[in-house]
Amino acid sequence: MMKGPKPLKQLQVAVPAQETPVDKFLTASGTFTDGDLRLNQKGMRLISEATESRQPDVKEEDMQFSLEDLETIKVIGKGSGGVVQLARHKWLGTLYALKGIQMNIQEAVRKQIVQELKINQASQCPHVVVCYHSFYHNGIIYLVLEYMDRGSLADIIKQVKTILEPYLAIVCKQVLKGLVYLHHERHVIHRDIKPSNLLVNHSGEIKITDFGVSAVLANSMGQRDTFVGTYNYMSPERISGSSYDYKSDIWSLGLVILECAIGRFPYIPSEQEEGCLSFYELLEAIVDQPPPSAPSDQFSPEFCSFISACLQKDPQERMSSLELLSHPFIKKFEDKDIGLAILVSSLDPPVNIPGDV
Ligand code: ATP
Ligand code: MG
Image (cartoon, rainbow, N blue to C red):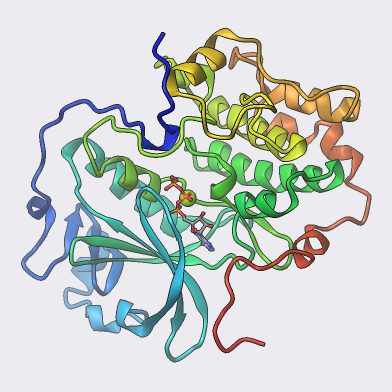
């Protein structure tokens, strides 16, 4: 077994792949086209044949929203796929999170990207971050996202270290509703459930982000089958290269919730410094060791049972998002008048907006 201090975030597993020139799908005006989808500086359109035959001269200028209407205020965060900036609509004053992802698309992921853009545009779930528009400009795809003003669960646990069970039940319920939508209505696997992809706003709402297009684009930046990001929350079947399905997201959720409860990443022993597990140590721990569990002397039986229902190594034994929504842990706090707004209002906001009082 190889051991080393290499941080997980830097590890990439790459399979050489043939590049497909991006301009194969680009028109001279800088429009990315694929079937009925058009994406350029003016935005994204789905143009069905019927629409086109009725309105051959659909003016791109007619679109209400363009990239030029946005002014960027400051960088909110940086991920492996690109930069997220806080942006304001110049005329309306509305705030957005503008995520820019360098586009270096290869054949294998092209179809998937198109599919994801369509899903993104059609998303209608209060627990999934809305993507209002997408633009293509100078080799970068910009996603105009709903701005979640309290940052991510990662920002929250940096400040509070641990989150109490009643709050965790609310977090779980909201994330599960988002997962039910993605899994059962949209039939997509998120693939990257982790604290930085669960975003929070001042009303105490939790929403899932980075499903679909941004994850696909980020993963297509290097070479095919390159995974960019963290392996920490990957299910045993996925990290070991076996086939995986929706249940993979449930494993990730269980690990995230357990981390929020105990105040450290569950696979890292408390005495060890964070982030010191090499990929191989992590792989071995996830695949060969018994799954992590919530200590029964510190947590309620309902919470321990919820974590165990998520962290089953055999995906068949793992509960689905729909089943977990009616788990006793979720039900336990349902009638209590607890909101996450109280928790988030006591924390420092991740971004101070200039001009705000
Ligand atoms: P990785 O790229 O490795 O997956 P990441 O999820 O942190 O990591 P990004 O998705 O690029 O990377 O996001 C960077 C940061 O920007 C996030 O941690 C989050 O705090 C912030 N962020 C992303 N989207 C939004 C949004 N819609 N509203 C507010 N903040 C956001
Ligand atoms: Mg993210």
